[in-house]
Image 1 (cartoon, rainbow, N blue to C red):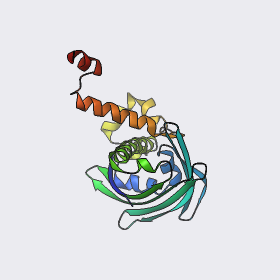
Image 2: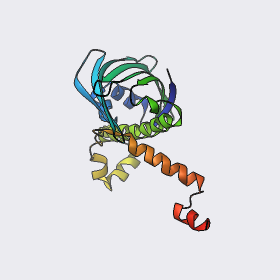
Image 3: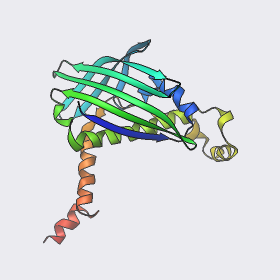
Length: 213
């Protein structure tokens, strides 16, 4: 079972972040391509993940469990899902620790996962790691936006109030909705462009073609 480690950071104290992580509806709304299929039942979660890689589209529907330990600010997620249309199956075990980091919060994640079926070719090597990096960054942005949208006035510093008066609409705007479908094909295209920029030192392909003449 492949293993990945990820870290994300948000500019809010752990006392604000920890309760939100226990709210499955709020967390799922921050995750691209994910949605709940029915209400949570105790520790059990029911949802689906929609993924698109070029011509390949999959919708993994299944269930999982979420357990959280308030004493250690750690948690564990076990989940699995299947897409009968293309005979694909996904399984993941996620452990996370919510750590105070100055005035903000750091979330350390370890993910053990298995992916079978037509998408299995993307479950190894640099591809899945880069996709995970970008998904983690997007999730962190959405999580921080949701925290900002629901921040109590009493927690806002004088400096923040002054700044907020010039951008009331931005502060009060709702957190962005999660994507209806995770288009990993777009992520792969961005990865390719980043790789080409690194290969040619930031010069455009046209410039390099001209130099080769």
